Length: 103
Image (cartoon, rainbow, N blue to C red; front, side, top):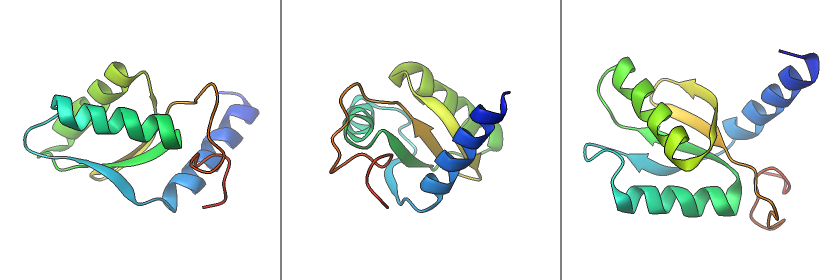
């Protein structure tokens, strides 16, 4: 990984650290309504924090991978039962984007 990419990841993690989880994926998994909320949050904010209320580490990891694959987002960070994902918008809203506005 290049030095620039490392700096980008560090900056994204720093921004993500200050965020509150906007979506909680619980026992029903990645249902259509949860996915619709994820899509809305990614479209508005680009960088979001998600709480995964799944059992084991393997289940949480699989769920995070499924979310990223289905939404086209990339995993920025995973700590415990919380993940931070990023999907850059073509035309971000400066009032809503967590990458543009100060958190």
